[in-house]
Image 1 (cartoon, helix red, strand yellow):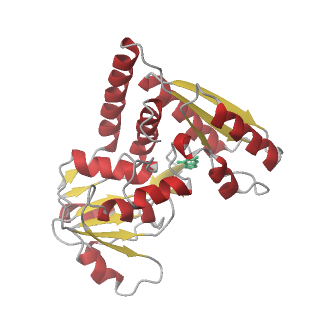
Image 2: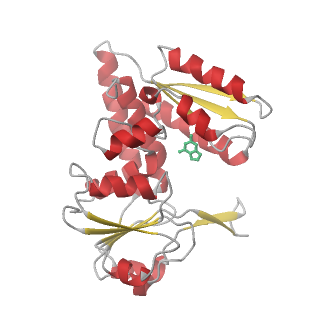
Length: 291
Ligand code: GUN
């Protein structure tokens, strides 16, 4: 069994991005510029956005943080998005989710110019991915794909089972794994109403768990030598941790790991890859690769 180390991989990718940005600038090109809109003061969102700004610095990008109070109207936020769409210096931007309940997240996502939608949430990007056109791919599935590639996992013709059908992980992951120019695998998506779940999982060469239920995947659900990717990050109380909680994956790691050829730990597996993939998308935005 080998661990897939998302921490080391993401650090390496950020170095690669920084080197490319340095080369672009040396040749007189534009410094990629990411803007982030943060509405309100949610603790989790503050941390995510701070980490995104720090990652921009590590990659040599320019970043702009736009703070708005949580009593802004939907119209005010949509006006801000329109301003960012028109701002020629900003290559890509994100609106940190969740938003206050009086603002429609879907309306906000659809207001973003898909050519600047580095989160890859806009329906145009989702649709373009489904038919294999240039697009921004959302960070978690893109990060998993990057890990599979960098660890030399053969996916072509393999059976890939995905647990979970969310819009930001399960569904795009299934698209990537079935796509000819990506996974080229045979894909099964399981969810809360799937029958014979254990049998389906046991047939997987690559098992991707993204359901948000700690320890859901047990040893009897995994084939010998399978590659197991754990996307779960449920916070469970932990008095021994400074934060008062720790992250728990969807996979019962201790019993499953010895049976796998490769497995991602939680934390330190898929998690660190997500911001790193936002950086990759921003680099692509800076190079105007999505049009
Ligand atoms: N909130 C939690 N994850 C994300 C993300 O990837 N993008 C945005 N915009 N908001 C989030």
